[in-house]
Length: 533
Image (cartoon, rainbow, N blue to C red):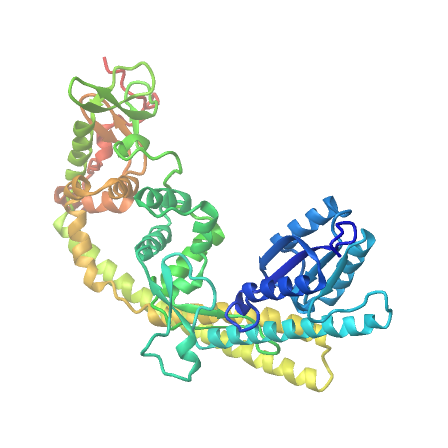
């Protein structure tokens, strides 16, 4: 046995799955020591040891792949591959037999130290089948228990997957009831990233910016999510406090309330899904954002009509920001001066006191109408839900009496179940969204009376929203002033002066008194930009 030509060279393979690490008798150290003692008794020479922490449901395992590659390159110097038991080798009968044939073809024996089989005896193939089948049955049992446990956890409102962005997993601690399953459940708790999720949903729900612009802004603040991960986050209903329970056996899929704290309300979640479905972004472009030059998308040169841009000029001690024409015009205004000019333009939009009271009454009347429409919509959705449930019950009866085949029944259940899930979400949102706008109407109208101050005090996004909402067309920008040809129609009506209203009451002709009078109107010749001369 001491002759190298007669000595058997073996490779040791030790494997555990993650769940088996803590179980007695399955540790990698135990397997390795057991195999080494066996080789010492048999006089085998150990040439390699591979330790695996991976499931045996298939052979897509890192260490096994390395072992296989090594044996193919050294098939003349390797005689055996040993493992403690056959379930350490595989828990898949079909793939295990295929792997045994592959190694037999290159002259290498696969065997177990504790369940050793003489592969030259054909009768031992029956025993081998029993060993391999036992391992596969055990794997199926473990998988079945895992699926059932996950289903039960979700039915109880627990998120049984890896914690999504914005949450951390927290297991039941000392205060959990002993002996109960809830003590072992993993609960989601908001972490330091939760505020990014809330801010993202609120920003996208407005429809003012594409999701990608929102993602870039939050990434600059420290969020760090890729585009695909960010979009998946915006479609995960767990953030609205809900848990999706998948179909299990004959149980239909469900959507239930989770035990975790929601980061957004259901109404905001549905608004975001609607925006993703219809790709509706309300008017702000997706171009590169330069925080310091918020007006660059809204200004055109009064001389040539080209787009105004912004940039910095380097002085002796610091940089100075300027808005300037993209062409060769001499239009060039300091950043602060340009924004003050826009604020001055907004200061001219003073709401007429006579119109203000009427506008408030109109808003309140509209609010009442919206609430009435919402009640009607809720009633319709509840009626539709009841109809679908009755139709599902009828389908059950038809299946039992043989009037409906199984394939057709499954199609009906899938279609109606999907519609029911959507209806339940909409009904819940309509019931929970009982916030009234009455208390905000007066304050909102007051804000419209101070648009200039609101513009100056707002940040990048606030200024962009104000400019995009108030001015329907581009602002004509020059070295001396800033003006516009058209403003929001509601603001224009509210801005009409009281003298104009008196003239209208008396039936007199009144000159149009909006800001558009600052621009020459079309007469015999078409309106054009002033030459600046």
